Image (cartoon, rainbow, N blue to C red; front, top):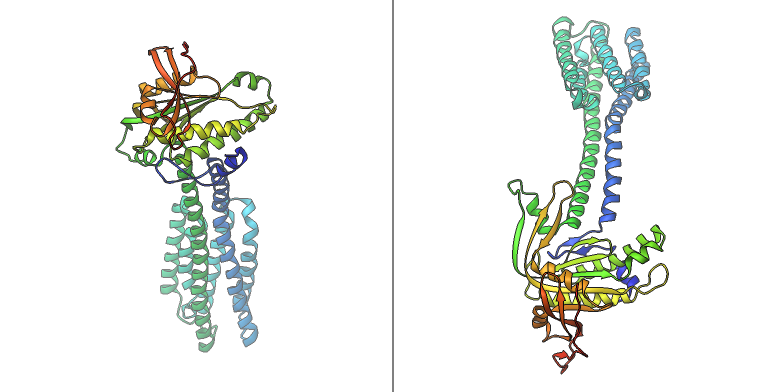
Length: 446
């Protein structure tokens, strides 16, 4: 498999060992940051935008009353002056946000209450102007926000008190307007009040829907990041509040360790940025292979790469799948060059057996596996020859029907004693012998 093609594939949506899609974690971080920035920007501007819309509608409503007086030539100078003053104040509201969080909304509410009360006092309650107090009580929470709920409650209570006051104190018609003109004013007031509430609430709900969409996107990004840290099934269990410990025993699983030969020397002679780009390209290609075979990458430590098969989803072909991965892994590395145009040889070790898997840590938790198979796989890698895939007898017994293996001989393994090991050569063609005899027995020591 070409290295560049493999590296490119890893940037697309991948699949975990659970068989579920696993997005690219770098893209998830970047998208989450962008969504958060948008959310906070919208949250800060949302109330200001709603207030500006309400102020614009108030300007149009006040201007409409002035226009009606002009068209009917039924001038009531007190009402005209009230509407002109209200129009000017409402027009300045969008420019008052810079002076403080509460300056603009309190100016809007104050101007509305004063102008409505003055209109009722001059022409009577038959004009319906007191309905704007109800509008104000509805909008006050939208323009002040729930963090100022006490102030909003007080202003809403004031609106109720003003409605009751004008109803009992102000007559229905003071005589300043004719009956037909007052009826026309009532119609305009009713339509305007409904329009003001509808448009303002619609804009507020639209902004709320957008904010919820941002939060949902942020949640999806968080889920994507968690899915890149843990297997999907394990991540789902971790979110259950009653679960304090996640630990599972698997009677059959396979473990692989791979190591870049001469990595320390390469790192010391390579610029940091070039080294990171090289490792990113190499490990991204390996990640693509992990997803291709439905395996689980456990961790990367410097130049060491660890993969497990049969965990967290048990599978009968866990050894075969990991063997196919190991062969492709070596091929991918062989097709790559480091920043100094040198080849990238690997040492790879496999082992199989029972393991325990679980999540450990509280701040930077991680998913890991433990067991004798892990130790043996690590020893197979450390005692391996350059460019080879070394396996113990247990793996040989599981692979010899489908794969070509060459006997290495007996080696002395630290903590395990003398072990008979084999080199995994490749998939066995038709009529291929079960194993290739060793050239000569070797002895190695960790």
